Amino acid sequence: MTKRETYPIEIAGIKRDLRLFEIKPGLRIAILNILGDTELVQACARGLAAKVKDVDFDIIMTAEAKSIPIAHALSVETKKPYIVLRKTYKPYMGDAIKAETLSITTGQPQVLILDEKDIEAIKGKKRAGRGRCHQHRLDLARHAHGPR
Image 1 (spheres, helix red, strand yellow):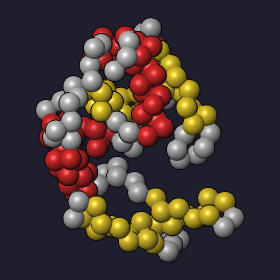
Image 2 (tube, helix red, strand yellow; image 1 turned 30 degrees about the vertical axis):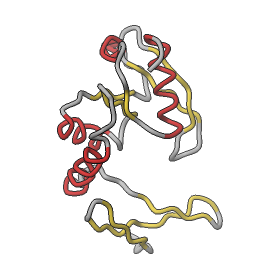
Image 3 (cartoon, rainbow, N blue to C red; image 1 turned 90 degrees about the horizontal axis):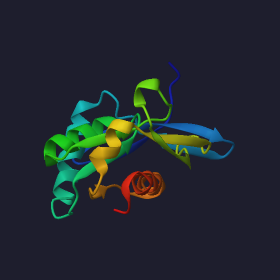
Image 4 (tube, rainbow, N blue to C red; image 1 turned 60 degrees about the vertical axis):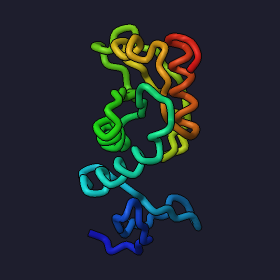
């Protein structure tokens, strides 16, 4: 494996050295991949649960794939359900609804898909989330059953 320069971080008391990758000439980013890092995921979920304890929400929505472990762990901590927006349609998703957004990772257009089974689950629910991708989750939710 190539030896890469790293960028040190500390999140929720857990320290990690993130590998730096050049994504275009003169621009490097530090990559945090939480998949499989159960120690960090659990610590983050505990920290996030403490931060949202006074937030009024009913359900957690996330886009696949790297955020799924955090959504799951936060769901366990808060005892709130979560749903995952998919990036590709599968026939078992039925009459799913779609919204287009830009991928944070690649900067390319991507589609977020709300499974038919989850449309009813979010009806009338207050959803927690942030950022540009969250706005598209809200757009899907509004399309499914009205405003937040």
